[in-house]
Image (cartoon, rainbow, N blue to C red; front, side, top):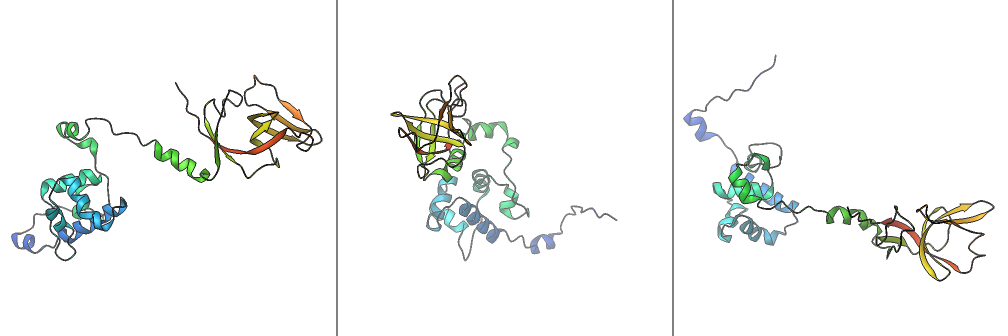
Length: 230
């Protein structure tokens, strides 16, 4: 049989005796939120003061390890907004950390908080993709030879430790005095085929690297960053 919890008003005595565990709980959650943002311990007070506009002495009481105090109502609202978490969670009235609902804000408050659309974090995802290749060398593509895989003007990473062709792939090379990027295919019994991704350019066949002294492998291309202008 399913039991439904009903909100029965507490008696005066029960209201006086109930332990909400608010002050130490709020202090712990404020410290946890700052830890998520890599705020060092000696900067906790300054950080809380900055995001709430309260005095250093005031905010220091909120996270006092011995006798923590409670933020005032306005500060609690600002902490919820600034940390992006539900105020019920900060107070310990919710067992789960839930995000602050910006979409439920009154229009007047929304206009104050979001006068301009927040900047899109495009650099973070870009760095996440390029970090594994940070030790590789970087060059810039010149020409439409490798379009649409590598566009003209696009930077690309190449592993300069690879100076021979042991498998098919895209390589950065020097051929007949010019640097270029080519897709190299190994053809058993025929040598190698140097081709562009752009079908408008013809491929070049060579017997092998040893028989082509004017061709030098500078590295294998590992990543290209294409900015598509629309």
